[in-house]
Image (cartoon, rainbow, N blue to C red; front, side, top):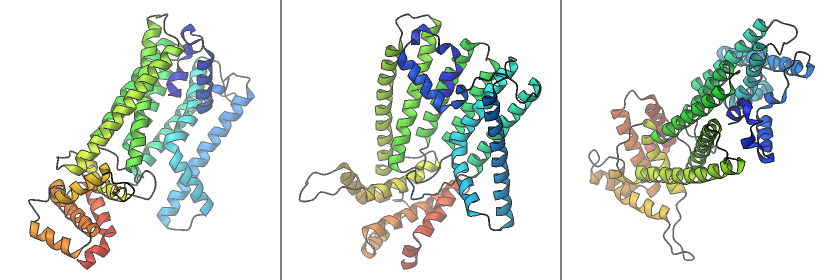
Length: 402
């Protein structure tokens, strides 16, 4: 969002937003995007020093990546501190480092194009080429790391597993806005229209990606991700409305009006998104509806496991039946139908497993049957095959007993 707000230079002097509250918001965005704190003047040694440090940091990062990759390929021991440093660079590259580092070079290109900035006396053409090269290197590194090194299996972390579709969508959004920002730097009105429109379009894409096939996150992480997507989408929608009001010179619009509109849209979006997510999860674990993605099929298993872990059973102090207890009981009765196994597994076979195992063992046996069916129906789906193998490994003790 800071990329969109700060790229529109008309925001700072616009009477529509002449408010101390907006000044605070703009300064906060500058702290998030510190490239806008520099002046980019020819005689400014602070800017030149910062740019030199950033260039050295990019080169060190590339060298560290090559060293770790070479060590992995040749199978020799790498220094623990270097591995730890690369671990955090790997985690922060796409979400944080790319945006912060490239923002400096994008502003350098804009100022060099207008003839207002030079770095260590090199020509404007050379500075623009160097900045474009660093921008391309940072983007390619972010794309490769996010696309090729995505651990999709469940873990004990808050997210439970990693998903790269939403971060890659956001990465391309940042790049496209930066490109248009450089092209239309002399036309703030066009820059504002393009930035707000692209932001709104990519927010819609993220919403569609999220709801079409849910990331394999823990339910709590899914709720948080859903809320964050709704808040970001409402911010872009509000900014798009502000751009319309600014172009039409609507005098009644002010910062209070915009904040009020954003709060209303945000609350409605978060509430609606949460209800939609809960309904989708409940339909997955309570019905045998057909799913059009591997993630939704796998959610049947992982969401059921989380439901069992978080089930609130009635006790002497509280005789009320919590919805998790009701859904869990429904699953116990209709588990073969819910997982689509009623046609391939007989009731006698299910009763035999029930007599031999605890309820947890019965659930695991059903999960294994479900993964066996998925492996047969989707033999070329790498996601399903990977999770099938992982599930067999998790339930290896149960398989040996059976």
